[in-house]
Length: 197
Image (tube, rainbow, N blue to C red; front, side, top):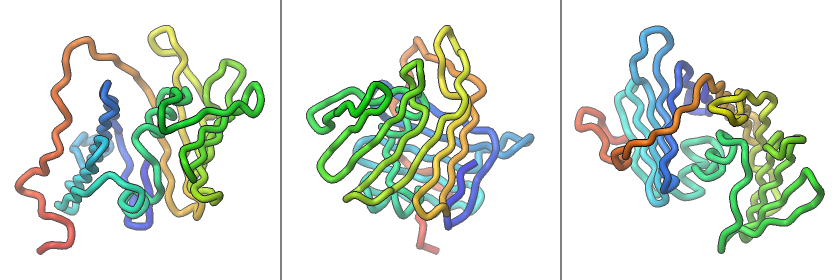
């Protein structure tokens, strides 16, 4: 279930995480299985396809766009961390600080991510702050074993205003050994650009 001030979408969900951190989320209508909503993101662009209302949004992948269309600044890297249940690796932009055995703070400029880990070292709770203000929090209350590893079974994400909610229940995890086609960020011709007649 995905809900923001613009509307809500719920049904069967398929999530694909690419090795280059591209990300694709599809929502299908319950029982019927028709694709009703798709979110596709790479490091530069964000594409939203709303098949029910027959429009698309193709925009730069930045804080303002994510806040406007996802209801919060939830990056694809952060969402991947939550889906996998593990904190991101330190890189040139992110610096990891250990507060305690089960709490990690990751800082990038004025953005701070706080992770609380369970006894197995997986994410149990997460908060994101921008300029010291809470942007969203996420909770992973249940983990389940898939393919000999534990992954989140249930993920709850809520923005600071409590108007935007994501509820993800994961029923199956698959890894692809074959090469997957590159993420397609071309909107279908039969959808109109949002804001145009």
